[in-house]
Length: 94
Image (cartoon, rainbow, N blue to C red; front, side, top):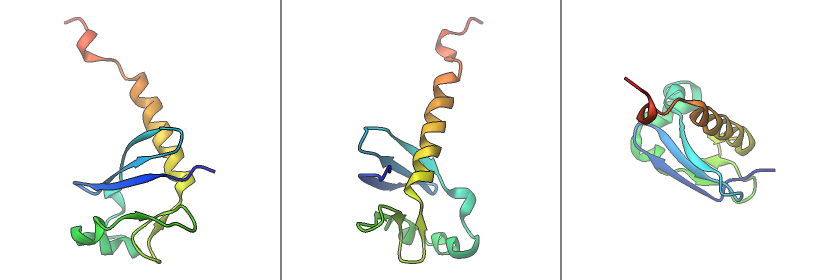
């Protein structure tokens, strides 16, 4: 199982995650704001209280708001793969 070892809240409702295999990156959670339990994130100070639940490894804000560490890992890997496949404009000819 992949459980993050570090998490930090960033601006614009994004989180930075690092996993034991040194995979790390930023995940945008802004699309969840205002929906169900995620309404609590409208308070930016609350959003910044993100932590890793020591029992489950979930990325959490309280007992009600937790995100699955495996799902976040898979999303992070997909984001890393897609960024590797993007053309580098630095090398593009004009």
